[in-house]
Length: 523
Image 1 (cartoon, helix red, strand yellow):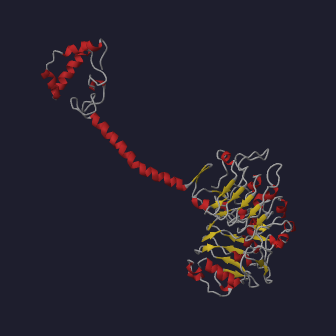
Image 2 (image 1 turned 90 degrees about the vertical axis):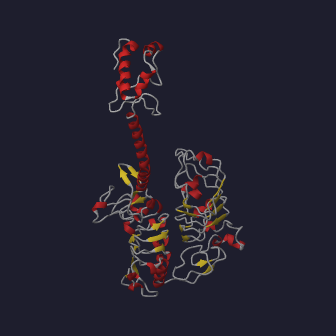
Image 3 (image 1 turned 135 degrees about the vertical axis):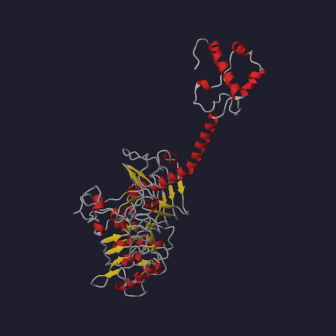
């Protein structure tokens, strides 16, 4: 689920001590983002998962960020989120706690390795008094290990070299180095100009630096270049970067533009694009790219980014969201609202939303029909509940039908129409059958056994009380009145079977009616 823990479900979690969902195929975001409905903002108290000691979602496919809600779990001792697709930074709530009067969590084990986390390793982790193990290797963290963490005897139970527990590489290997586990013992790489920029890199050798031609060759291969829909864009392996269609270079011969929209590109966006330092425009819109937006592209010189209408999941990496200059992100001359100036929506609309250009914009030029409220010339991502927007980022269309403040999914409308079309023949049959029965009852003459009891209606006449048989299954003449009919012989009653006999009997019965009912007029 991607909802907060509800108020009816939350009380059942208050006594939960261990939650283990590891080694499954779960995806989506962690279903604890935001405070539950039971949270009390006055006291900072939340009974949801308040007694949880171990939370394990390792070895799944969860995406999104690590939410601050973990800071509310005052009893949390073990947090295991390794081998997922989590992005963003390590939240401060893990070592500060959350809510009024919060204290550091009693965390002793923190497993965050093998994700896509970015930013730096926070020194605040040293404030966790019980911390014994912290693993952050295999991410995209930059910088260095804070000195406060280098002397805490961390990871002693895992390291073969016990002396490393008092060194920084006992936490994670420094940049431009590697090891099998991303921590001591580490092997330094040759000086490559900062190509191996991340700390805690795992592997058996240093990552080989790639030049721009090699990066484009790898990009072509991973996006099924031989199956691009326009053959004129085919790239020859090893051909000059600037000679390839869809590529432009600056005056120094460096790649500055990659424009490959609507060509049927498939596969992930290559993280090595982040090594194209002069890249200013990246347009991969309207393709079939999958996976996640790599945070590595923040190391380029991007000014224009268009990734709309692909099949990209997760969220825009938070470290990319603070990069200034991309799609006017961070331009305070266009708006004074910092929620709009620095926003991930300026890169791509989040899942569950859309805009005509697949992202928000602080300035929209020459597109008057897509201007929205919120300031002249601005464009914001709007809610959308159709299936494509629910699953992927950067949608530029929405099939929802908007009625006032209501959003109705088009698929729900189609399903309702389908059900109506299925039910319509059944309804027609029922109505038709009812009409046939009613007509049949109206056309059966007196004396004919219809199977529906007495009280049938004479043919060819409008319904009136004069047409009704005077004897019914619900009521009969009194014995005194019945005596008036004793003068009729069996032959007279038999004659009622004919039209003439029926008329005779009816006339006689009407003449006797005053004697039966007194002086009241019989209609």
